[in-house]
Image (cartoon, rainbow, N blue to C red; front, top):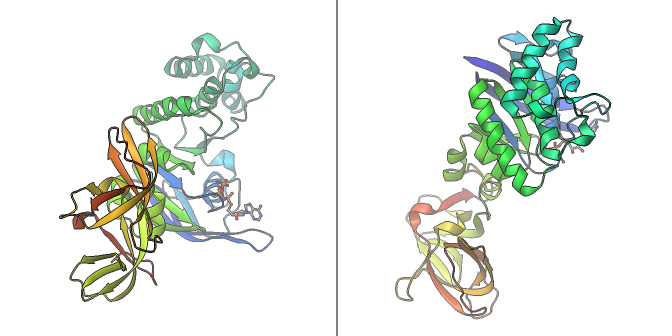
Length: 355
Ligand code: ATP
């Protein structure tokens, strides 16, 4: 069943800034959708329109078939978790979680039951009488989630909820959020600028670029078949190697030092891409090209090698190679590489569309 529908939803701010031209998105019941993109692409604007914290300029928002454009936030049956948690500092954890339910006039016993249940689920039972300032960042984050969960809403909205936590806690909370969401089965719309967070949490991702949905799909769809160079560069870490090239009768001419044979009916300027993990070390005879090594990053389980395609003039295109395990090649030495054709990504340089 489709739970949330955005139909040609657009936003123009009062100063005339056209933040979102038009977004179409259908979210299934229980689905975890992540809105991801660089700073300023319009993620928060879109989320806040769904929440009712920002008016919708054009188009329609429907939740379970009902038009929501003009409904107050409190009447949309959604619960939002913010980046800064937005807890009431003078209230205990219990009262922070109970507040929304009290406001709705729910019976005391029922409130106690709900808060206790959710506190147990989130491991907050011992902390119910504390104030937010007596909690760690991770615990505050859990309280903010608890406050959303006790309301048992139709839709959860998350606005970068993990950005104030340190890297380790962020990973832990990410796993917890995903497990909780699966258990509760609540439809979720989640905003982040972090592509790793987006990839690990989402059933489907919406990659936003300047207010436009560049591509909507599962993490693997976007990784395997990015629709544009923007998505190709945004999804995956380190980023895909993307080089300007020419598609000719001989194949893909990346530079004087590198032509990759290919028969393709398209001709002209393209963007040729290959992920760092898809380049493979080879011997000189079988290699597609040589990389002049400039820097090596040893991460233990993997090694990132940064270099340039080797040319006589020394101005070859930059490339990153990702190898598993430890490798210690000399800086300035040459590494022979193959770029297997099944891993190429080709885009029309003009239209930016995948070929
Ligand atoms: P970030 O990750 O930095 O929070 P974002 O992707 O969430 O970015 P938004 O906050 O949605 O981006 O902003 C999208 C665009 O709309 C930005 O260019 C921003 O400057 C602009 N914008 C946001 N709020 C307003 C406003 N009230 N009036 C005018 N322009 C705004």
